[in-house]
Amino acid sequence: MTLADLGATARRAVQVRDWVTVQACAAEILRRDAGSAEGHFLAGLAEKAAQRPVKATEAFARALELDPARYDAAIELADQHVIARRNGEAAALLARYEPLLDNSPRYLDLAATVYVHIGLHERAWPLYCRANELQPGMPLFEANLAACSVYLGKVDEARALYLKLLERNPTHQRNHYHLSRLARARDSAHVEQMQAVLRATRLPPEKNIFLHYALGKELEDLERWDDAFHHYQAAGDAATRVSNYDVAADIALIDRIIEVCDAAWLAAGPTEVPTAVTGKTPIFIVGLPRTGTTLTERILSSHSQVESIGETEFLQMVLRQVSGVPGIEGMNPATIEAAAAQQDIGRVANGYLNAVHYRLGERPFFIEKLPFNFLYLAFIAKAYPQARLLHLRRHPMDACFAMYKQVFTWAYKFSYDLEALGRYYVAHERLARHWRALLGGRFVEMEYESLVRDQEGQTRRLLQQLQLDFEPACLEFDRNEAASATASSVQVREKIHTRSVQRWKQFERHLEPLRRILESAGIAID
Image (tube, rainbow, N blue to C red; front, side, top):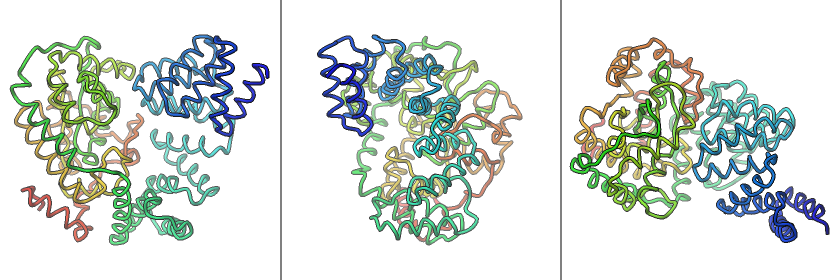
């Protein structure tokens, strides 16, 4: 068999996901010709399928080195860079090779998906559109275009795509879920369709999580409160059963942060001024999910001096790197202790700024709004003496219920069970008290209820606290065309409203176990 025959055999195997054959063909090609770009590329595909990103990265990089015109290797390499959080390198590869993709729907779609993963949704949009033009009717391409449409506020386009997808595949749960998020339900037509899917598929709740959340959302829209909660609870209970989660671990992390990041640690030197990016002041918006962080981000990023980089995990990544603690799981007490023991806070400051550099434009202020950064405010305060630290607060029951009824994949596992949610909220409040005492005036707080009831007054107050001049554009945040990839991506396109204030009251009977946990910890509800 010739090298060409081996390559053709491997390509056919790729189409049917026969990775054993792909790997064997790649190995034979490289045995005969160690400098074969095709051999290294095929080996990279096999390593990618086996979820070995380091080896996949090496293979794609070698293929590109041997043949710099291989746009397929470049886009695959960019995709692997995302896994390693090397987003800046991924962005550079995409920018270089994007002009070569015009006739490859597969790599147009993959390049667009990489753009989405690194937060550059505007760059993804035309690539998704071109992929769908070249290969219309491909469900993956249409679903990706629909999701990107939502991020960019193109809700009508997204709705048309999801309806088309569901017409072809009426039982696709996630498409039902995504469709349910696009607008308030006005009638029960979609509810009845989803209930029919439940009856027809007869799957256990663990296989119907997204469908239950979608049903809960639309039934709540229709003010069928008990029916809505039934589905929220079914979804949350199912997610809890498959999550293998113990809230005690997250509470232990919070308690260790309080112990380690005290006044003595914060005052201890040496501190160094970040040098990686000059003239940039970060604004960290933190708080529990669904407490108004995205709304506040949109208000502030409507200011002429402020831009947003959305939600990144770079700070946590850098803290783990600085700590030297091995492993890929989430943060733990050992990581916090080791990171706090490092004397050179400049490693944290510059490591984070280097990671986000590819996202920064010309404006002097930039927003980072990952809610979990609330855990690391002491490190942020120490690393960036000029940073603004903004904490969003919301009525405890409204905040908890808003999290309980929202799909977060596995980022916020505590939100799927009322007991775990209550216990985590109590720990979060304990940490908030610690930050108030430790950070003083640097710890700026905003109440969601006050903001939605007095938009202009609270916006003026907030801008003053952040040392920014008032601009009328901040009151017209719904005109902000920047992408939003959070759970509030549709709501932030609307004008401000108070519909969600005291929403929990409609579910008061069902939420009684949560209320008891909060009140027993001294958290006022009424």
